[in-house]
Image (cartoon, rainbow, N blue to C red; front, side, top):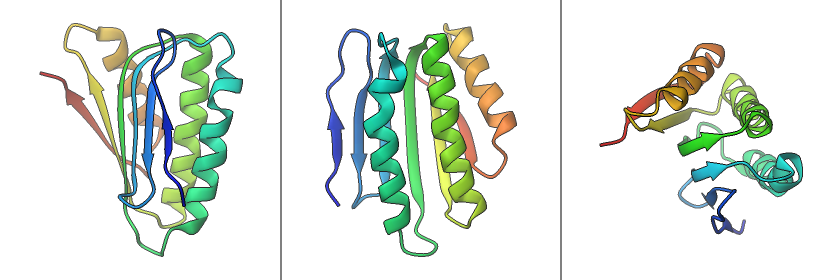
Amino acid sequence: MENLIVEATRSSPAIRFDAEQRCLRLSGESYPENAAAFYAPVFAWLKAFLVTLAPGAAVRVELDIQYLNSSSTKVMLNLLDLLEQAAQDGTPIAVEWYYDPDNEAMLECGQDFSEELTALDFHLMERS
């Protein structure tokens, strides 16, 4: 399976999904004009990736997002829900939510996600 690589823009995050390493990374700010359209290829890739995994193959997700607007927050929750379902079905998934200690909003967002998504191995990681 080919990797998914999307370069960051002023309003959208960099995306690096490495199928061989089973590492999914999003970093930057997310406030695209149409979040659903921007993230549609991400969902398509992720769904295809999850069905190719060998039983028990662990996945690492690194989310280093500095800002999410409301529509991106909803899309991020949908993305995490997709991963949550895979985890409930037996795929070990570790999520690292990076936040700046001066950015209370992103810390709270990560805390909210971690409380809602119980099947994921969710870690809040303070960026130094």
